[in-house]
Image 1 (cartoon, rainbow, N blue to C red):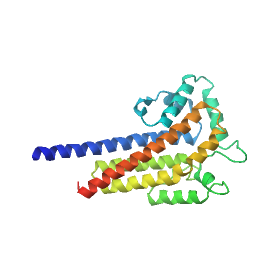
Image 2 (cartoon, rainbow, N blue to C red):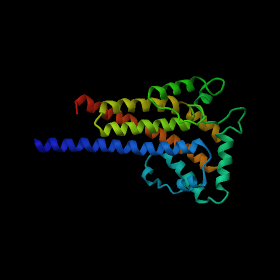
Image 3 (cartoon, rainbow, N blue to C red):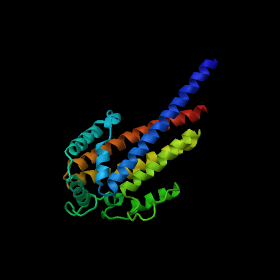
Image 4 (spheres, one colour):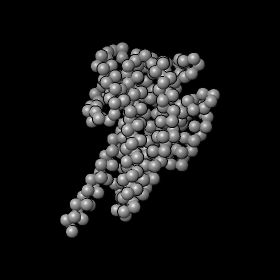
Length: 243
């Protein structure tokens, strides 16, 4: 009987370790996406992305794999003009210097969810209140509205790091609460408008790199939603059993 209890305890520890590792991985990837959508990439950032080992994400999903193929193929041919080419592409689409029939592919939720297509609308206020409720503040000096995709990704980084920390400390109930906040935020404030944003951006973007980034982003968001769902179920079961 003692051996059985010990083996069960080991299995529980492994499950928690896996969830912590998953949180660390998703935090790192959201951090990468936040940087990509924030401003045009530097030459160093481009080289770092070119050096990513994508093999650990090989089985994520088909959409993600297609995006990785696009990005990898583009960066294999990078040269002294790549940084400028990507900067122009980023600025024309994500910074709003060009439009498609009067519509802009800027990465703000309000622009894609309000009837007028304007910034600082209802979604902005909802996101601001969520940050405030979860004790997350935008760093000083960043002038973009709170519903910028980059800040949203960073918000999920913070929540993911919190989940990992409380799991490490044995706080399953708090971890479940943070998982639920993360899952709702992803559904309500990223997946709810990303398709509209992506479809419009694809009409403006010229490089295979950013087209691939959009695929990678959507593929990752979908996979992360499934991960958060599975983590919630696992934590709910543990709490019900009093583990």
